[in-house]
Image (cartoon, rainbow, N blue to C red; front, side, top):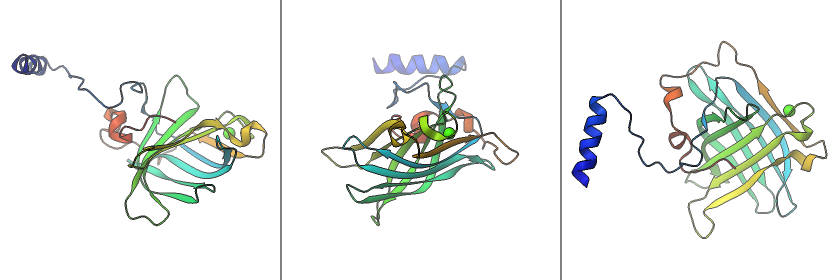
Length: 193
Ligand SMILES: [Ca+2]
């Protein structure tokens, strides 16, 4: 079987075809690099336990690189996530108001970085019906992923902040190969929250 697979690969290569390899995220393959605009956001959501969590997030691409920052505070568990680098800016073309930001962050003053993925949706101003969600890969069991699924700011009651999607400008340019990036290259195996 192995050599048959290889010969198919060789044939495909000779025909100039791309072979989709088994990637960690098949279900989210519709998420692709977002157009080079940018998003800014800040506010709070109520977690499933009813407690408030605050966030500040911005992301996009700027001068050929991913750009942004994410801060997130879970008061219940007393941790503060602070992004150290941004590795992806994605969208689903079927959900044009939504953007995902992926990257690495520190939790409190831990040395080891963790990966995160934030989902933001701008449903107008004020941000009553805007959405925020976050998933964090904390690398250890039993609950590897910390998740707050996407939900309305302040449960849709108003006053919970705003998500603002901005149009592209002359500085929001893509890097080389930007639009060839796969979701897993930007976000690891973190699915959109
Ligand atoms: Ca908004």
